[in-house]
Image (cartoon, rainbow, N blue to C red):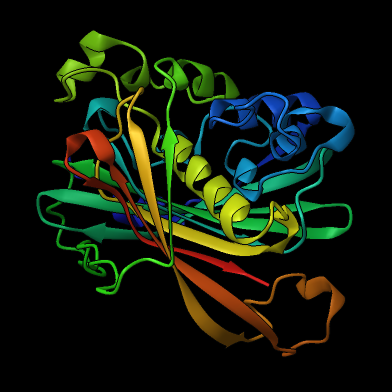
Length: 309
C-alpha cells in the first residue's frame, strides 16, 4: 500500500526528551574509528574525558534510541518493510557547539514526501533545543523502495553531482575496523542490516554493511583533523548524500576541495543566538568526496559539504 502522504505530512511533531554524557560521546567517537593510535594527543581529544571535545555529527545519535531513519517509519501513514528502506542523505546545522553532557527536547516531523514512482522519499527534520535555546537541526532523507505511485510531487533529483574536476587539495585514507558496525550500533542503531548476514542478504547485500551515519561521522572527523586542526567548534553545517555502501574492514579515501568564503544570512548563521537578526557571517566550505579504496574507488558519499568558520 503506498505511503499516505497527507497523513505523513499532517502528523504533529513528536517530541522526546534526550540526554547524554561523556560516556555516550566517547562510545560514539570509538564507533566512528577514533582512538587510533590510542595515545595520540589528537585522538585523546575524542576519547579521554578530561580533554573531551564533541564531534558535531554526534548529534545524529545523541540521546540514544532509534536513528532518524527508523523514527520516520513510526510516523502515522508509514507502514513499510525495513528491508526496503535506505538512508538517502543527511543534513546537520549547528546553532551552538554540542556540549559534552546535556539534556534537551527533540521535536521531529516529516517535512517533505516525494513520489519517485517506484519509490518514496521522506524527509524527517528534528529540531533540538535545550534550556539555553536551539542546539542543532538535522534532516534525514529516507528512501523507501516500492512505495511510490500515489501521484505526489516528484521533488528534487536524487542523482548525485560529480566531484570537482581539479585535483583535490587534500586526500586522506581511513582504514575501518572489521567490527566497526558492531561497535557503532551500540550508540543506538540496531538495524539488523548492519550485523545479521541473513537480513543483509534479504536486503540484497553480500554481507552486513556499515551504517551510513558511521561513514558520515568518520568523514567529518577526517575533515576536522585535516583542515581544522581538530577544532570541532568551527563546524557550522554538514551535509551529504549516501551514494553507495561501505563494508566493515574497507578503507575510505576522503578527497577534500577548499571553497571560497561565502556570506550566510541570519537563518543559516552558526551561533545565531549571539547575534542580531539578519546578521551575516563569513564562512568557508570544503567539498568532499568519499570512496571505497578496495572496490576501485566506488563512491560512497557524494554532494558532501562541510561549512566552517
